[in-house]
Amino acid sequence: MKKDRIFLINESNSIVIDGDKESNTQFGIFKPSKIKGKKSGSKVKTHNGNAFYVIEPGTPDLIKKIIRLPQIVTLKDVGSMSMYLGVKNDSKIFDAGTGSGVVACSLANLSKDIKVFSYEIRKEFMKVAKKNAELFNLENIKFSNLDVKNGIKEKNFDCGVLDLPDPWEVLPVIAKNFKVGARIVTYSPSIIQIEKTLRSLPKNMKVERLIQNNEINWKTEIERDILRPESNGILHTAFLLFIRKVAP
Image 1 (cartoon, rainbow, N blue to C red):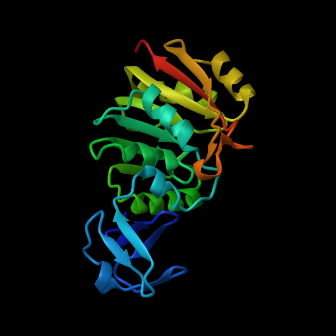
Image 2 (cartoon, rainbow, N blue to C red):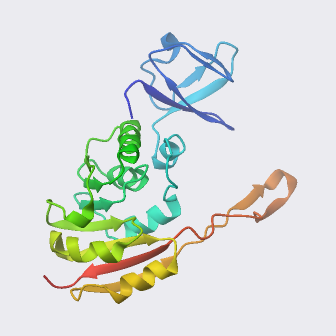
């Protein structure tokens, strides 16, 4: 996140303002002299008395403010990726199909010692992903505007993410760049993509799990005695196929 960006919340809203400029918002005007240098937890007010609190944003806060071009990977899927890939505080992570950069930024944001190498073939997507990395204030992502089907130069990856339409064509090309024991997840909206990947899986890679995450939010309006599932949710987004390199 740029140093002059300030995240603010109250009971009902969250906003981001530029700490170096006067910010005219729907809630009123924030003056730099009133907010600059405020620590997390500090109370600030607009010119008309609306109160907010300064916060250090987490990944869910930052995701709400990113620039989006392609459909983003949802946090429900990113959470499974980080856990089942076994991401550690010093992991070296490969990411192909950067898109808007949600996966790269979310994983890199877990620890400043994580190193993410993200490949994207489309220049317009790469441009947006770099801006989103600035929002997160991340310096541990290296972006490359290259086609992974032509190979990658970095080696000894601990894990990887393939958000690509044809992972079965990419896995044989990049397998040598991963450590034995490394895990890779493919993110595929269609089960046909999964089938093609399974049928062409390199011999030194084995399936660990295939999952589909469905998220159902609940209404929690206790004051109205409402506590029930929402009528809609974040259902199918993609299948996550986790595979592991078991031999050189």
